[in-house]
Every structure is written in C-alpha cells, then in structure tokens.
Image 1 (cartoon, rainbow, N blue to C red):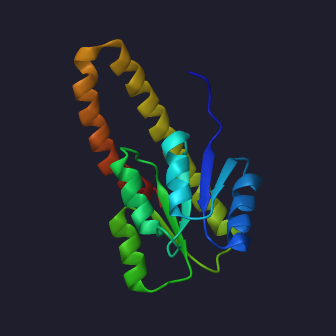
Image 2: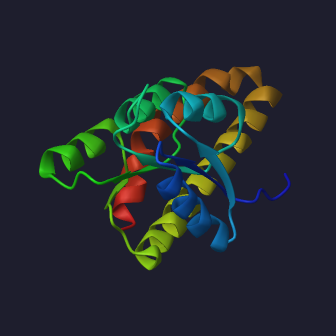
Length: 167
C-alpha cells in the first residue's frame, strides 16, 4: 500500500473564511479540497479519500450537522471539526451530537486551528488506512466480509470518540 498524503476538506459558504481555512491546511503541508456548501462536500466525500473535514455550521442547502449525518450514512467515519461564528452552548452541543469531534469558534487563531487540523487529520488518516486494509482482507476472503462489515460499523461509532479523547 502506498503512502497517502493527508487530505483536508474545507467546507464554508463564505469565500474569505474558506480561503483562510484552506491556507492554514496547505501551510501545514496537506492536500486541501474545498466545497462551498454541504451538497458539494458530500459529492466530494462520495468520490475521494478525505482524511478530515473542517465545516461551517450554518450554510445554505445543507448545514454542517446534516453533512456529518449524511456522511455517516455513507459508511464513512471521517472526523469533522465544526467551525462557526455561533459560539453558544446550543450550537456547540448540536455539533457534538451530530458527530463532530471538535468545535472552533470564529474568530479563531491560526495556531490553534493548525493544532486541531494536525490532530484530526492524523486520526482520519489512520482510520482510512485501517479501512483500506479491511477492504483488502474482505476482498481476499469472502468469509470474512461480514465480520469486517461489523468492524466498520463499530469504527464509525468510535471514531468521533477517538478524536475527542485526543484533545
């Protein structure tokens, strides 16, 4: 298996914020994909390997919480960081209940966000590597396919907890 450069998906409907978030990820040495809303992000998540997602909470077409839930319904355990100008307890609680592993309030410091990106991308990269290995095993032995599917379902439930526990 060849080494994969970690990939960050940045989702925000505000061009300036999206560019700032993407620049922080790129300066840390990551491949950065961008999306303008949740629908565009979901399309990217369906077709590309993404190790972590930074998403705005409030966006047109599909908000950040719905994006997380729809990504989970695809069977993906990709870690999400919610970035929002809404710093109230209800918004933060909603983000975590939908499966975000961290929450960053706007305005944010580049240094703080870079630390979060590094941590979450490392976790996402490891989860993707495990998933690829499980796929290889499942493809080589049909008898293990059902057991591997159970492992994947457990992985989806545990991955947000792994990211939170690494804080």
